[in-house]
Length: 226
Image (cartoon, rainbow, N blue to C red):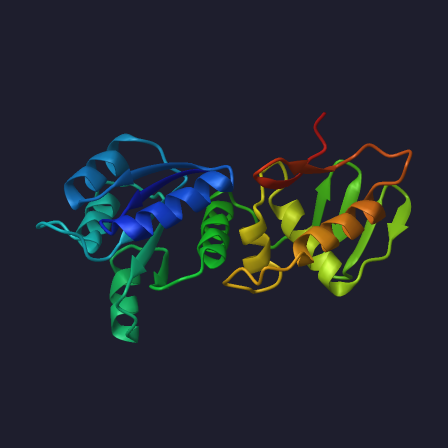
């Protein structure tokens, strides 16, 4: 996914760009409205993250309105410290597709970006996920590999679902803690490593091709590719 971030706060920018890159996405950045407008109008992006308040005369809403008037339909997620209902309505009416208030968890930001990207691709509600011969049914909460049923505990299923939704991407320990365990801090435990080890034993028998890889100094990746 190619993402444009228009944000003037350096701390927020570092946080978001680092997280997107760790998740395997490409992130361009503009720290003012003029540059943000230029990039959004001249480069193809899968989604745009737009800060509501920007320095100078061009704020986030003005950029969104100008893009929509020009026919640009790239999904836009608005970031803002303004959390009042009226402000959120104003942002959505200007042409924004979603609205996330600061401070925010990166896991939620990434989930919203994924949802916006799927919406544009025409994807409906998913009821199952598949990576190679590994399959999970999101309605019955059952997993299988080929014809072999896999018995998973609820937390193991949640972990596998997250990995499958991000198949082919490096998933960091922080992303797993935020999205699977809802920890927005590092509890300094080996909970991720233990669950990954147990999950690997269940989805990979001695005769089956490995799917769950450990990416050194980065995280984990679920992929059916060689």
